[in-house]
Length: 241
Image (tube, rainbow, N blue to C red):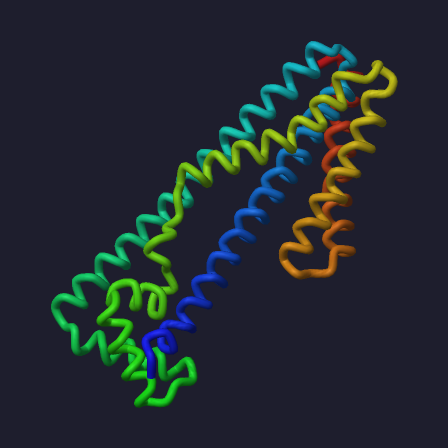
């Protein structure tokens, strides 16, 4: 068996993993924008129920945008940092095991390849060739499901979440402060519904799911959030609070 024949599945797997990673990033960006749309829309529509003052609406919207985007970025940084630490720890353990018990690790790799459908002899030959080429990378990909060359980056994730949330939050913020007083809430609701249709459809397509239900859930949740906060704002405004 040639070396190219042995490495072919791993090469294809790397491409699949790269595509999966890109889809995950796109899905996270869509969901981050969706969070920015819904949370900021709920906030500014609630304030609009209590007051028509443009400065108050702008202040509330900007505060919600900054707080939400920074919270998303911090949460994503912590989450991805934890994931990266776990990946690094797993690679360190694997590296030590390869140094201390190479034969046992070779047998483990052989068995893992057998579980993927290779015969014993072919799996053994493939394991030997992969080990000779780069033992740690072979075990990382086959055993751990980790690509050592593409570890998660917490800073990239944090900035992506910050930008996605900000982009989503800008829509309801601009929709509530730019139109004349009597048109602010209707324009905001229509703009938010249109944006939620787009993000719901996009997230469903990225997840290879039917878009109809996703769009309905997305729009329904956004309308519910805006309806509740607007009602609370009207009650507080009527009470003079």
